[in-house]
Image (cartoon, rainbow, N blue to C red; front, side, top):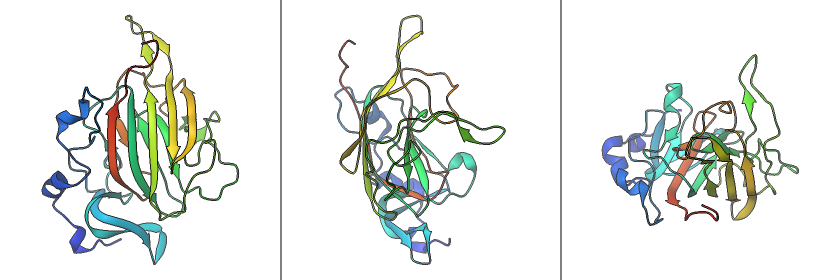
Length: 249
C-alpha cells in the first residue's frame, strides 16, 4: 500500500529520537532498570509512524499516522528483513510492549529468538488454542508441509482485543539452566504472561524451542525477537529489564 510522504522518514535520524530507541549499552543493565532493546534502524520492511489503525479500504492492512514512536511491518521486502532482533542478548528478563494487528494477521514475541508467545487476531474465540493470542506456540515441522506436532500451551483465558486496537503484553521469562559442562539442567519457563492485564500463562515450562526451531541448540542467553513476517503488525513502547535471580540459583 502506498505510504504517505509524511511517514517516509529517514530512518537513521528519525529512529535515533524515537521512543523505541536508546543506546546499545543500556540493554545489559545490572540493576534491572527498564531499557530499550533496539538501536539499529529497521529495514525497508518497516516504517516509523506516530500511530496506526485499520485501513478503511481493507481491514487486513494497517494504515500509519504521521509521527514517531511506532514501528510498523508491512509484510514486504526481503524475508530476513521482516523481523526485529535486539542488539543485545538477555537471560532472565521481563518484557513489556504494545502491539496492534490487522484483521486476520498474526505475529509473535520470541524470547531468545526461540520461545514464542503467539500474537494473533483471536478476539471472540471461545476456546483459544496455543496458536491463538497469548499461547505458547507449539513445536512444528516445515516439511513435507508446515504442521504443528504438539499442542503447545494454550492461554488460560482469551484476553485478545479486536483487530485494530492497541494491546499490551507483559512477559516474565526464565532462561534454561545449564551446569558447568553445558548440560541443560532445567527448561525455560514463562513465569507469567499477561495479555491486556489478564494472566494468560503462569509457570509454563518450555522443554524445547517452539515452532520449527525446536531442534535448535538452547543457551542461557539470547535475543528478543519481534515477528513481522506473517502479516501487518505494529509495535510501540517496547522495553526490557533483567529479573533478579530465581530461588535456587
